[in-house]
Image (cartoon, rainbow, N blue to C red; front, side, top):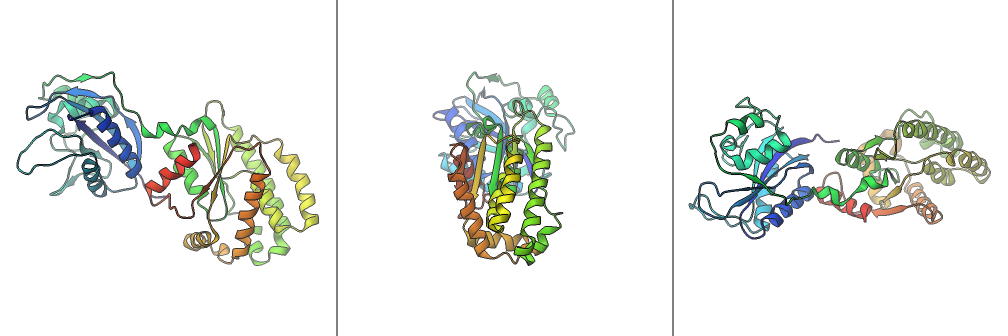
Length: 375
């Protein structure tokens, strides 16, 4: 996984429907930049440095894979989309939306285009009031004071009032936690682990990951599938059952939101493809005894990718023992999953086609997957 870093961004508007402009800006930041970790209330403040309508101001904390320098042009583009017009040489003026980076965990920045921390934040109550609400204990790296201390000692004596109106965190619209237990499934190389990790981090979920690298039969299986299929599938079944049972037992599904990147039923899918008819009959008897005792997810998500993309992903991640997987095997696994899903009407399932998406590299693709899951 890439490394996240944290930004604090100030938002202000004093034209048109000010609350809508702030909400729309937060929505765009969530779609294009990263996870909105926290959102302050909305504060009404007088125009600073010029005579105009009062501003509405808010502040958000955002976790992102992008560098601070990469975020700046995206914020400027969001301002343009939301109708901000800049007039050269006129100084302060009314605007539909104003977006400023206040702090960055990526460190101090001083360039012609960007200075972080914001050089005037300590003198602006309209920044400090909402920022103190969500980051009051954050220490200014240059001034060596917390945001709360900066607010207490600011020279700005403007009247600032917190409104009853609020803006919402965009991810609250997806409400994934109501599933309580969410399982991401998919073929080899479909990206199920990456998606489970992203969702767990963004929605503060407990994460359960399949651990399979130490299975001694797996490399042998890819060398001689017919010989090693039965011991491989039996060892996977026993291991998945025991580990999933142990992991789920740690959590209270009435209080915790749990995300996993596998379910034991995948053992049946793979076994049906790899085992001879007599072997599968024996295997299924053991499977049925185990599976009925396991807690079932509130939602299964099956990530479908076409075989060509799967092979690309397998090659890219570079596990040596996977490089000889034939495309016919991946085709059979995909068909096995889809047939199994159709045969289980009691399952709550979303099939999401990600063949044309890269939800790790592209934030917009990740949001598209979230929409599919939560619809």
